[in-house]
Length: 226
Image (cartoon, rainbow, N blue to C red; front, side, top):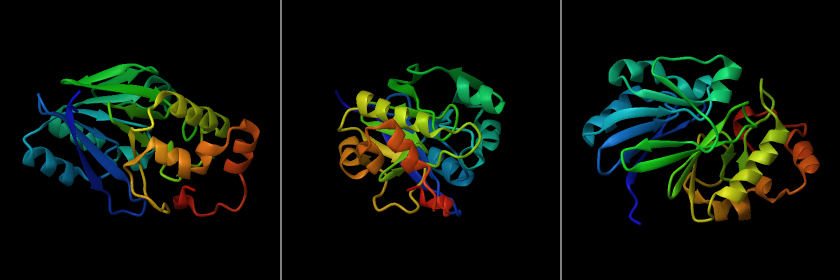
């Protein structure tokens, strides 16, 4: 089956070097932006250049470095905002046009179906968004690591089970686009098969060992994400 969407990538130039993604349904030209950290001008320029309608904002989690432009984009485009019920409830997050979803629910962007996979660990209600050939993983997983599990609502146990869930439910051929690239050896867009080979957290099958390793001491650099 032919892919129904285009993917655009905006690289944030701030210290956290977020990756901001836009998916655009081919048939309807409806677009969704994933984790608009900053990049307000860049997002609007891309939407205008390709004659898109910004219909939705998809939030993997509500840390400030992933939602910085949400309010401004709502004001400009009056778009819908999607965040997991667990994430919004735990962190008391609210914004205009907000829609809450549960695990495995589908969001439809024209002819493009987006499955919401609840993957707590980095936050209480972190979510990955799964399309036909693409997984937007936020800060759950990176190409060769996973994110920290030390902030409010985080859990290394939850992270272990979220990675196991991704291994079970996402095909090896699906390409993964993460929320950051800092400290990593590979750019976003590697396959699940690549992660199974090169990401150490995909190769730890014991929960206790995983938790001890993820929470080990000597990880002072917040932006290494290793």
